[in-house]
Image (tube, rainbow, N blue to C red):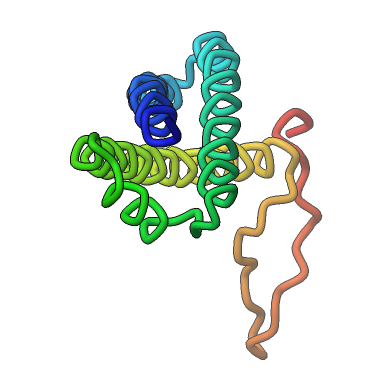
Length: 156
């Protein structure tokens, strides 16, 4: 009974994680293109998938701990040894784990792109505001020369 419930959750989560991976890849393209309306749509679609994955993960953990098994690979191995669908259970568990790792790697990639874009936009805003950290000129003694205060581009 518990083994078939676990197998069912794994199968559902494999589909959900596949959809999530597709959305994360689409998010990367939208970030690259700086397509904000598409990004908003993607984020709205990601939230329910993440909620389902979190809920099912909790259910799997609860199910394994109710059987006095650890909620990890060792617990899964123990239930698979006693199950008629043990081989498929282990295969689907490994498949889900690999998919989630791919989602995490793609999400990390997207996070890097977001940070690069934030730095770029921040630098441009600094230039427009006139408070960029451009190096000053040096005077004859090697100190920073005091030149007139830089004005924002809008006042130049």
